[in-house]
Length: 239
Image 1 (cartoon, rainbow, N blue to C red):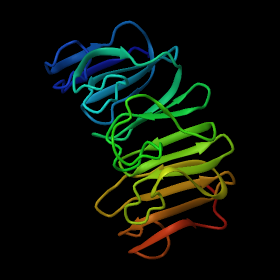
Image 2 (image 1 turned 180 degrees about the vertical axis):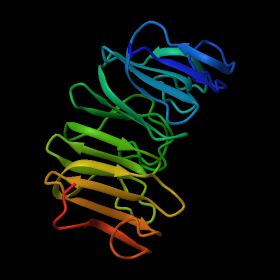
Image 3 (image 1 turned 120 degrees about the vertical axis):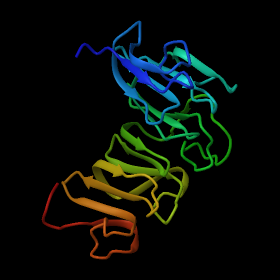
Image 4 (image 1 turned 90 degrees about the vertical axis):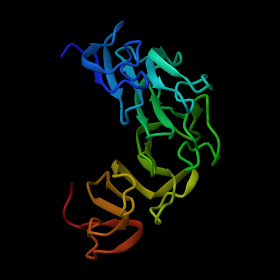
């Protein structure tokens, strides 16, 4: 309740942040500051934004996630990554990039191996060791996983980039605009054995879905099929 951050558990890569690689069996309070956001999707690295907007990272730096540290090393205590102020950060998963949205609405990506086009810098290989500013616009929100990056810009347009596995309407190494529809929310469940499914709600409250399904999850009336453009679930129900 006081916005203090505590970590514990697996610490093999220093992701607890207590200066060791010893398993933490009790909660450890991260020192120095209060916090407003933490991202720890996988067990090898931790990112957190303090209450003044500073971004810190600690844990495994095998793929440049801790910016400007190009060597494969462990960061055992919180390290301030740069002098920018940030609102949110997402981690795409093991060996994948991260994206962070700053307080001015600009979106940056860095780190990880970029074979799935997740950063949005026009490259499909290599590691981005410094934050790359996603071009064209300012952004309201961003989500991401191993399947792709999904971001809504300041004009409510939805852009997607990343791996186009199973025709899930991604398939670009630069941001791709999804139609002229305006959106307020997007969700992607990530890549699974049945493909990748995206759901989004437009600014009028209508729900759309696209991607691949094996259990009727798109709501199209079929159990198996690919939906390569957004499918409107209902013309009457709003969400």
